[in-house]
Each structure stands twice: as C-alpha cells, then as structure tokens.
Length: 258
Image (cartoon, rainbow, N blue to C red; front, side, top):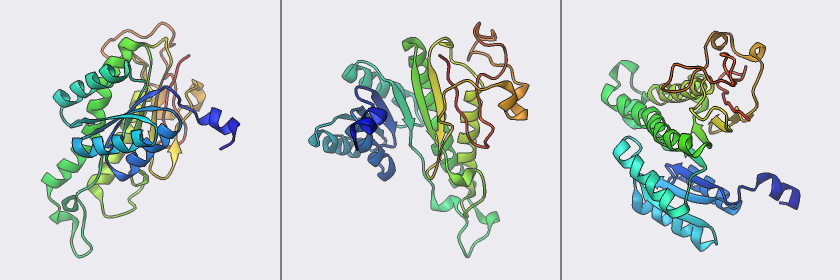
C-alpha cells in the first residue's frame, strides 16, 4: 500500500477484541488488523488455539494475546474483558466473529426439513445469535463507562434469502442482522459520544456510515420508533425522539453520534 492508503486504513494503537478468532476467517482478519497497527485480543472457546494465533501475530512483530472465552457464558465473557483491559489498558472495538453451523441443523440432499433436529437447530441459533448478543451486552457496559466504543457484528448473505439448505444458520444470521438494526435505532447511555454498530456479511460489507441520517431516509418500519437509551425510559437530550440512524438498504444498519 502507498502512504495515503496506509493512513486511510491505519488502526494503529486501537485495541480490538475478536471472538471466534481461532477460526480461519477471523484469524485472517486479526492478522490483517495487526498489520495495520492494531493490538489484538483473540477470544475463542479453544484457548490454546487462540494463544497459537496470538503467538503467530507476535512472531510477525504485532501485539496480541490469546484469551479463552465461551461466548455463550457471561461468566466467561466478563473475565475475558477484564484480561484484555489488564493487558492493554482499554478496549476500543469488539468484533463478534464467533458462529457457525452444524450438520444436524442442515437439510441433507437426501433428507427432508421435517426430520431436522430441534436440538441441533437450537445449538446453531445459540452460537450465532446468543453468541453475538451476550458479548455485545458485556462490552457495551464497559463502552458506556469508557464513553466510546465500536461493535462489529457478523451476518451472512443467507440471512436475506434462502441460499442453501441451512435453515438454522440462515435464521440465526437473520436474527443477528435484525439485532444489529435494532441496536442502530437506539443510543447507548453515552449518547453524546461517538459510537457505531455495524453489521457485516461474509461477502459484503454493509452499513459502514456512522453519520446520522434524516428521518425521510429511514425504513418505514423504523420511522415510528422512539429512540431511547438502553435501560432508561428517558430520551437522550441530543436526540429528537426519532431513530438516530439507519439505512434504507435491507440488512444494512449502523448508527453514530458526534
């Protein structure tokens, strides 16, 4: 990259926590962020694999730690956050990358939908949706105290249309997309500070603008929503009661305040 691109894509000094970081996709994202100057906290259920990934980044001159973390257990997420803060002093970004599918939640070519195991579908839904919801809750509490923070969620193109025989995974990712859109109609308790919540698909980056949009550009279903702070029925002083930000493109959502 030339110097202009280096400056544009630099995340130098930013502390980024990534769940599911021992996997192929988010392991690669972690290495890319480390190359741009970020300090990485690699969270994964397989703590030894997360540590191996962190070792690889450090071997290339980057800064990274591996942290064992079960994204379905708040008693595991909270200590993981504490470990990151102790190591780097703060956290700037959470990337929710943990997710995946199970064979039992997929319709085989020689099978039928009615034979799917609800237990397997529940596990897929929990990993993808609950595994995004819970880390977001825990980290948002910290970001609220810090006064700023960025959260990036991971969805899939199959959340918009039934592309393959994976109803459990598709439904779960649709829930993640909806959750991200829901977040985009609310403000955190630090409403006067800068924040952003984005949703990514694996093939396409969407909803990356953190600027407030006009009411006219909001989806019709969102226009009637009053924007309120989480855990508080009062509307933020710097918000007119309308949705603070959204995107007219289906599946795209983000919000920000300056």
